Image (cartoon, rainbow, N blue to C red; front, side, top):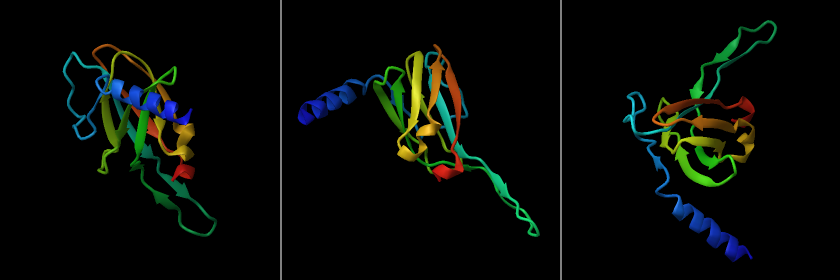
Length: 136
């Protein structure tokens, strides 16, 4: 039974290769062609301040989250994976067909950071994911 599940999973992954183009190294500051639709995801840890009586506040700035995300349909079918590049942006772009998708961090500790997004025809939908400090 395990071999059958593995074979089905591999078949589903191979069948989806043409479904989405992942462009994590591509700059996201310029618009894509008017024919493309998809998502541009930015993942960040928010800044915070720790204040203790009698001590000066200790604060951090927001910083990018570096990790891998899976893109699924709302019914749970795997579509693509994407990685935030280890640069200052913490952003990736995935080109998808119009529809509803779920963006899931591959780190199991970050399951609460899952986002559902609607992709519209010929538009790049921007998604901001704030990673809780407990997921650090």
